[in-house]
Amino acid sequence: MRSPSPRLTTDLDKLADNARTVAALCAGSGISVMGVVKAAAGHIEVARAFVAGGVTALGDSRLENLEALRRAGVGDELTLLRLPQPSRAAETVRLADVSLNSELSTIALLSREASRAGRRHRVILMMDLGDLREGFWVLDGQAATSSTVEEVAGALRSLDGVEVVGVGTNLTCYGGVVPTGGGLSSLVRIREEMEAALGHRLAVVSGGNSSSLPLVLDGVMPRGVNQLRLGEGILLGRETVQGNPIHGTHPDVFTLTAEVIEVKEKPSVPIGETAHDAFGHKPMFTDRGVRLRAIVAIGRQDVDPTGLEPLLPGAEVLGASSDHLVLDVAGAAAAGTPVRVGDELSFRMGYPALLGAMASAYVNKEFVGGD
Ligand SMILES: *Cc1c(COP(=O)(O)O)cnc(C)c1O
Image 1 (cartoon, rainbow, N blue to C red):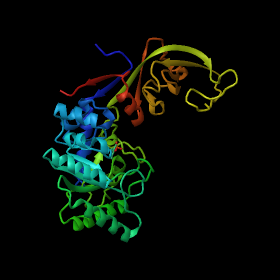
Image 2: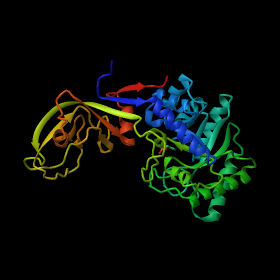
Image 3: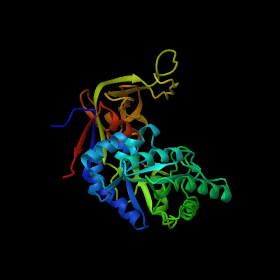
Image 4: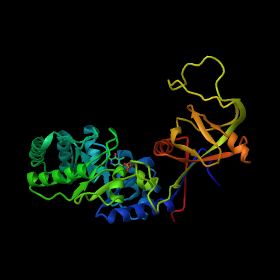
């Protein structure tokens, strides 16, 4: 029996295929893949599919999700992707083998907690190459770079609970900065400077997320970059600069399904004076006359409606409130597929919709394949 809708269905075989395909592509450029499973909100079936596809190093941005992976024994090496919260340093060293860091005071806390627990916690030092999310600021020219490296290395030398294993960067997340060969070459250079300052080799140069995949696809990833942290590229089978599909991957790992609760012909422009909608936006309407519309039982509390694509040809998402998604289904009816109350409609989803649906307690998760 299928679980009731709304329902998010994950095809675990397709997902494992995607992990395998993307990892093979990266291996061709000397790059190993850290599988980023944060979009799965701790559902370990997704992480298991990454592992089945050969991606055994896993990353997540939340300690709760790492705990779920740890408890299930999934993954060889677990990385905390979001900078650790100082107040949760002890949990960080307990749940993550590696963490990404940009604050010396936090690294000192991690070192103290790791020593206390009789471990060494591995650290990747994040460098901000201009995207203005996390990272040590290293862009003010060569001299400033060197002084930053010296200062960081100097502070780290005395910490024996942590082992610095590499440098990394994150791009196209906040500032929308697109990774370039030149930008990532500077990360390789920073690794060399950091190695000299620390007096030991750094194994990892972590060159970003799925927005770095075009450099691999085009064969222009600088030598020396040897890791990418990939979520969307594997989950949705596409790079994230242009959104182009990655050859050989499945774009249809995830399907969202929700039930139709109203079908009526209504005008396409509201009647009466309009202010703003429930979310403070002034909605815009195009007058297309009277149209057949359907409401399905899912809303913004569950998904970001912008990335939802109905699988039914001729159906179109118009908008959503907290609990209602409104579609124009006139085209579907004209094409011979009338939509009725009680029908289920299914959707392909973008990354924001996937994040929401995975995390929503109201959306049932269904996993198929994977044995
Ligand atoms: C989310 C995240 C990633 C993965 O991003 P995708 O675009 O899904 O590949 C990589 N690194 C960090 C630090 C992240 O937070």
